[in-house]
Image (cartoon, rainbow, N blue to C red):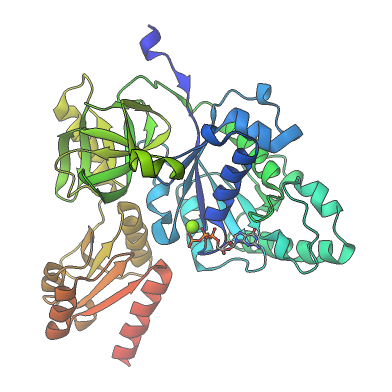
Length: 452
Ligand code: GTP
Ligand code: MG
């Protein structure tokens, strides 16, 4: 019947890259262009997610995109601030993200978090393109606001063009060092086997028409089948972040990638101690800046359909985990749904042993990434959990037989005050960093020094 008919949903695009390389600016520029095009209302900024409908994309892309060539409804971009890149890329039991933009500062080139992002893209087999950002900073650049790439490159002097190309080929070389064959996007025929590099500027909007065109084409060409979902069915999603929201207590910011969630649905959410069964109290959408003063920060909505970002208020969410699955029960048996969530959590669970280091991370995705790096380095783990470093973690670490295992490795988490006091008292070392391999490197240096 009509109710269960498959519809094409919006592909989810993760925006990844090293700190300060321009991820947020790129999305700001896309939003800004929409405002300039008189489409400000059409673009919604939700929970770290920006939904851009097809007609807006086609406005910005100009002659590069003919909307009648496409039947996907648009693109949903997820910004990944700093170290949060991992949680958004988990792709178990569903698609999050479907495709990605790797943002690289064209002058700065590959940096630690760029490499980390590339690793995860490879591991999760997420197709991506590279936005070679900040082309306007090449010395002598002649800016052409919002121009397509080819047009603005043609307007540069030979020397500027040569300098830009030098940087771009260095980037392509870095990708090839990481076993990705890449080329300028206009030379790429088969985007499944070659990474397209799109020169852009988030500052001037140069190349943004190309970037949107390539993303749209890529999703239409390779993602269309996966985008066919039953949008009326019970929602499936992933928790992006667990937050406190004034007036609502603990809430979760989630990306819904399948089905519909409604304001009174029963839901199952992955938590630290296992699945949490609860009932939605409110679905909250942040208001645009100009409305906040008069209307308050959030608007309550009745329902949200895939793909979209939404803040969910419900009782008992204190133990919810970033990166965990979230499911609407609907007319299914709640036990079946609990089992489904449990299975997904177990799938992510990190292998631990009797002896090893304690590992804490901010999301399930980052915990998984950290654990797999440690495994590759043959560093055993005794306990792995999502959450800040607490005294009970110190209590576990201090029982290690080997001194080098009396350590806690924290990624993107805080160390609670009483935990650092206790650690000092008990001779437990705490390492924290927001780049995984730096964290592991620091730990290995420490071990080496001890053993010398
Ligand atoms: P994190 O969220 O901290 O990881 O950084 P980000 O990748 O979101 O970078 P962000 O967009 O905050 O940009 C960092 C700085 O670079 C800001 O000062 C931007 O104004 C600047 N910037 C970003 N893109 C461009 C660009 O294309 N050209 C120039 N000239 N500056 C840019
Ligand atoms: Mg940012």
